Length: 344
Image (cartoon, rainbow, N blue to C red):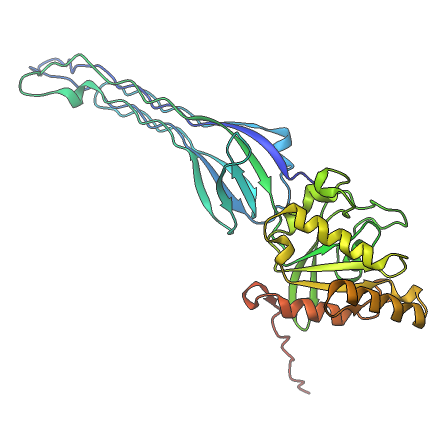
């Protein structure tokens, strides 16, 4: 399944049915009078956040969503049938934007959230509604109200608890594969990750979601590379995990490159809680490891953790540090395993 996080859709609500002009004409019934029914209401277009989706790929194959029109009214005071609604099922975390691609109409951040995007037109009144003491045989009826036609953009921002940041080939996908059941592509060349990956990580009987995005490079805020296109997916994270390649000859410069791009991206992304980790320590000697750690601490101005995603060294400590930064209400606690008593 391919990943898609931005798409354009065309929606239109149903028009209301027209009212009916009719008169009751039955044998042996004198002065039957008007009996034209009202038109039915047109169908509306809704958006609903559902579980089990983490991409907008379904909207690549269908971009037009038109609700049904209401049926016209009929004689014998019969009201037309209402048009059926149509529902756009989107992943949690989807933003719905206006045609200008800037105005956010609604942010679908909660499971089951439902919002009306285009309301169906009202049905017209039949001539029965216009009957009065001075107009006992009205010959007029209202037409149905037109539907609403709109062009909208859907933009997905994945809702994860931890976002992985780092230069290409810093070991982000390796960390995700080592700590979860996710199987991202891993290779010894940069830009292996071409689209975001999600993994559920567990530590100390709690679970949280980690998002891995393509690596950032210098100038990403100006459109270079792929990472800047997906930075929106870590906007909603509670904490950022910044991985720095310990085998690089320019550890401090690599760290500052990522921070500069976060600040250039804007928003509060650069102000989010951040855990800085020196990765790939298994490939360093003790002397090189201490030198790289000291250089990174000077650049970051805070504590630095050490880890090797391949060897597993320090991974649990990093997960516990991340868990401590995540709000308690965002954690998913595993149910305690019940131990059955043994009976002979």
